[in-house]
Image (cartoon, rainbow, N blue to C red; front, side, top):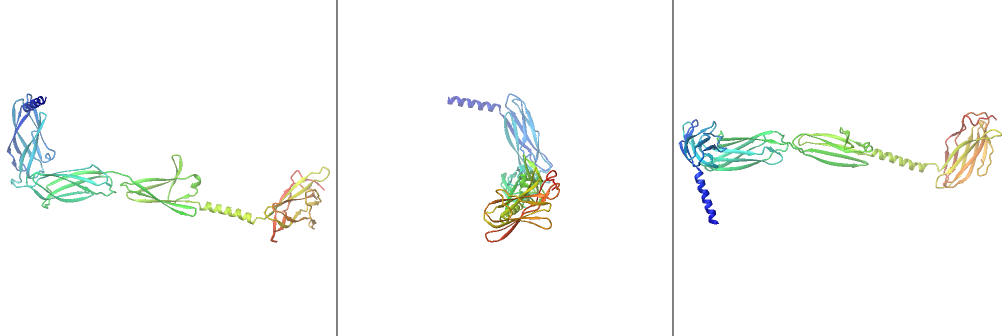
Length: 474
């Protein structure tokens, strides 16, 4: 089996040898001036049984300096064909020694042939440094990240080159470095640049030049472009200051991006909370996702900051509640322990004149006893006091009529226990015809506490009767 594989391999190699093409490359004139064309004889032998077209080309870095002609050659089956290949230097190609590589592609194969050229200057065949350079970089660049730029250098001469200087400059950075190249050496180098985080988004150009022996003019130049991308980065810091029923919020917004940014800051608050939320900055009341919020709009340039200040101030509410509580406590502390309430009621009499029955409700609402309680009431001159004696009611101690027609009714009570109530009642008859209500003056109560301190309480005035009641003539 192994022998079979070897036989097949040998047969394949023989077949390839039969179908492969052969080339022969001989220089005609390869020492030329800048305005001349280098010429070579190229002979291709087609060993295949069909005609083939063979394509000629240069590598990418060599097309910057040379024009190749022709670009294809058709050779009939089993024959050879010879043509003149010319390499003409482009405008700007510098003098020097070049080892140009010509690619031949045909019959599924690709081969490279060397075309050495000595390119002089002004008819002189002196040595001139010739260095090829390519530069590559990312097209879209984030200024927050290191920016790498890659270089590849090619010494097209066999002579070593020392003291080469590479200068790289852009609107955003500059750099200078020195290096050496051996004869025909290819060398790569990466340079990392640090950009400013606030670099504005835009297109920028990189220019690279190679100088030899501190010459004023570069021997090789290359340019490339890149784009600074946009990015937004907002950070928020918040501090609070606590006070007496007041909290102050300081919210600082930092724009760490490289473009201007508008930010909307929302504070959610119910209608009651909004009554106590204020800010010295302009803000609006809006609805977001069904919630009513107070909204501040902040516009920040790159690498700038702005602070929004607002506070929740419940001092007014707390002060109001405190005053109410103090008032309630003061009311219970300083209120009169004894109160009196007076009311009048019409009593119908089918056999005579209607009467006015007056009740005085007396109450000790404190938790302690009071002593020497004296209750004094007055009847206006329009009313005449009538004796009234009924079980459960206390009769007046004295009744005194004054010259002006008023009548003073007086009760004396030795003591009122805690929370004790008494009802004082008397009746009166109108002296004249009365139409409407009768105003009843207030009743006064004088009493002493357990320490002998005398206090006086006076009730509100009241009225009795109506337009169709209490109308009678004595």
